[in-house]
Amino acid sequence: MATKSTVILGTGCYAPPRVLTNDDLSKMIETSDEWIVTRSGIRERHIAGPDESTSDMAVEAARAALADAGLQATDIDLLIVATITPDLPLPAVACNIQHKLGVPTQAACFDLNAACSGFVYGLDTACAMIASGRYKHALLIGAEKLSSIVDWNERTTCVLFGDGAGAVVLGASDQEGVGLIGTKLGAYGDSTDLLYIPKGGSSCPATAESIAAGDHFMKMKGKEVFKLAVRAMDEAARDILEQHGLHADQIGLVIPHQANLRIIEAIAKYLELPMDRFFVNVDRYGNTSAASVPIALHEARKSGRIKAGDITLLVAFGAGLTYGSALIRW
Ligand code: ACO
Image 1 (cartoon, rainbow, N blue to C red):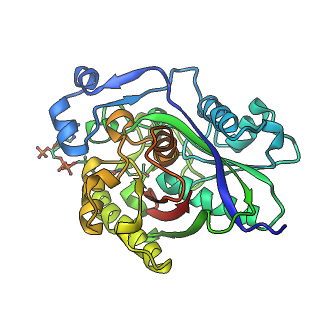
Image 2 (image 1 turned 60 degrees about the horizontal axis):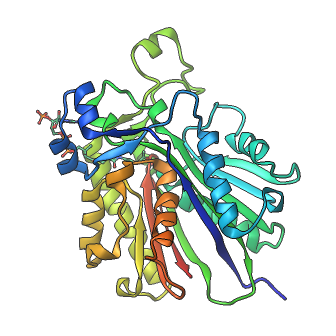
Image 3 (image 1 turned 90 degrees about the horizontal axis):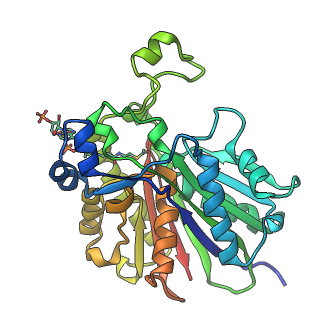
């Protein structure tokens, strides 16, 4: 029978055991729980240990997603990892993860960098590859060790980020009308300077001076990112709803990128939806970039917030600035 749709067969997530609270941070830098909660909604975040890599976290999330799907690593023929913090600049961390998990050497394995929108970009990519009929089971992972690219002396950024991984297993279904309904992806390439790492790339390789200056760490213009994030997420949500003839009211649950509670509240206001239609866990994880949406998706499923027949809207933005939305019917 012909493939009619691409569906999520299983989800999983992993967060490192070490929890860094706002009070812990206030002992390291000049900040307070009150400032962080008021500006961002974040109360704590998980931080990977020195020997815990992005691939280690990804493997844990992937194993949970495979178990949830009732599949083995040997069933996977496509492995995509959305990340801005691969174990090394080269090779793709997808290959390290393939090896650690025991995914067959015949599987296509690659990384995808669309920052915090990476999971939504990866979902579109994996679903298109499965819909082509050339791939059967995809493992899509969002995994980040952001603590490795955060400047822990820079209070305007370090309080916002955390580490973790989320994963989904995707496959074809003969059932019509379920799975990925559609996606809307885009980017504002004129705003690359809002969130970036100044040095260490091919245009300006790292030097002793650049490292001493901290130019291998993430730099962010917070206020500008905030404004563009709200605009991009609102547009991405509206566009996809309009494209598929849906009203926001028909969405059972919105799973937004977990960067800042105030950004999520602004989107809720623009879409005229109550906050209880939004899944929020930014208070416990902070911003985990590409891992944020799949961790939230997994927690939403496991806590019973998603039921058969529901339509879920994923919406994200990230460095680039990239943005993306996706509609899934369960
Ligand atoms: N603790 C205490 N005070 C602080 C801290 C801190 N951690 N950080 C900044 N301040 C101070 C500032 O120095 C400033 O002081 P001043 O008024 O004396 O100059 C004051 O607090 C206000 O700072 P603002 O930058 O104006 O604070 P704002 O209300 O804009 O909030 C924030 C900052 C939380 C960063 C907000 O702009 C934001 O969330 N932006 C979006 C960031 C984001 O989502 N990034 C993720 C991108 S996704 C990706 O791809 C990784």
